[in-house]
Image 1 (tube, rainbow, N blue to C red):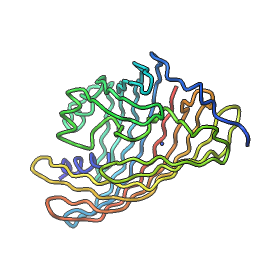
Image 2 (cartoon, one colour):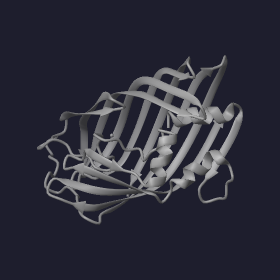
Image 3 (cartoon, helix red, strand yellow):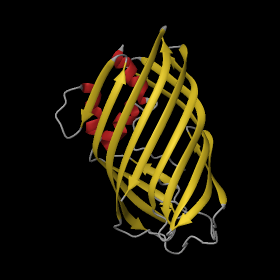
Image 4 (tube, one colour):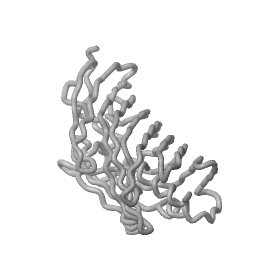
Amino acid sequence: MFNKFLFVTATILSCSFCFAQNNISFIKGKKINKVSTIQTKSSSEMMGQTMEQNIITTSWSEIVITEVFDNEIKVEDKGTKIKMKMEAMGQEMEYDSDKPNENENFKKAGDLLNKVTNITANFQGLITSIKYDATMEQQIKEIPAIGSGYNTGQPLDFILIPPKDALVGKTWTISFLLDDIKTDYNYTIKSIDNEIANVELTSNVSTNKKMETQGMEIVTKLSGTLLSTILVDTKTNLVKSNISTSSQKGSIEIMGQSSPMEVTTTNKILFE
């Protein structure tokens, strides 16, 4: 039963001062270190049993701009380290990629480290294509919720490019498809201090995933809201940090049996 629950976990696993539009740091060879800490709390009822879980995952990755063309850039993203702590069904499990661990449920996470994901984006910072390493691609087929955290159409998380001549108070929207659902990211420049802009992002978010593993079909349908606070360097349009909270409600269906589900996620990302 606990192993089944781990697979469910996988399914729930953006004044008068203007931005410097001509200083975007699309520089070939530019390297960025990313540290992301995600806490996910969920509650669901399965087979008459209420299940709650709390997962805290910290991951380290390296981002490199490998090519800069007239109208697009190419980026490599490589995870280098991961730590995870899970509390579920009265059990606690921990994983540290720097330490030996024979738990099969966590080995797949370790297998994804140091595997390069190649990303192409346009000069608005929107992802146009993603190519995974063969190992990662195979695991995504087995457990679709696994991935690099990027989706085609979505903005790159380490770059934020506002409209031309954006001022404090300026708002704009980026729309894209995620899981075949139209998603709008609504941005507002709240303030600028010492050339660092505070940008608020709000969105209605939805999850609609179907997967099959160990003979079980799992369908997750959730909807809710996202609120992010983004700090971005106005000289380079490079993001310094992104702190977000999302809350979603909906249902999870396993082998034809549907149950209510709630998920709250907080994510703190730092870029250097």
